[in-house]
Length: 276
Image (spheres, one colour):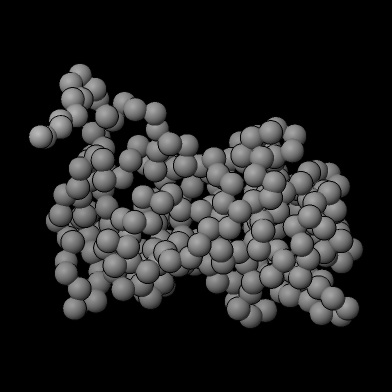
């Protein structure tokens, strides 16, 4: 006996779109703190602070950022937050106190979301001189600005993928173009010789859902350093004043939607970077 599911008259693309920017999780390679201005009181924090700072999330909530950083850093941060453009202090090196004289160096980025909530994202620094992932957009921008005008769009696109691959060292860099109807195609590619080419392939509108395309407009760089990493919870899940999960549209560390992780794994991708 065969059962059939009747979906007559239903347009699946009109079903409720997931709010992938509203999230209570981040990727595990960093730490996120939700702060209340002007005193920089810690209202939310990710559960991995225990292993990173040596302090439990419960012992950080309602504390002030100055309990982690020295007064010199706090004064510099507060001065920067008064500027109209947070690029005045982004990205920044921060020294976080642990026990005794022990401290850990982080790369940090501040941003305010659409509700005006201040968010600080931290990633353990590889060295005191280099800022790896959180300031990648500076490297990408500097490289792309070097691209000179070319005679045609095809050459220009090819130079872009070459430059981005040069900066990132990624195995493959593709330039993907959306049509007005949401469908897309690969119009330039730079890759390892051993890899199967994707250049010229066309993909349906459902391949990259509308909510994801919206985020490309709001947040022009998206990095996933480890597609196999387990997401980390934000504690508490809801902002204590709004009683809602925090809008992480502009977050660098925002966790990845499960269906996208599955998509990347099916392609054999271990890390990805998207620049819109």
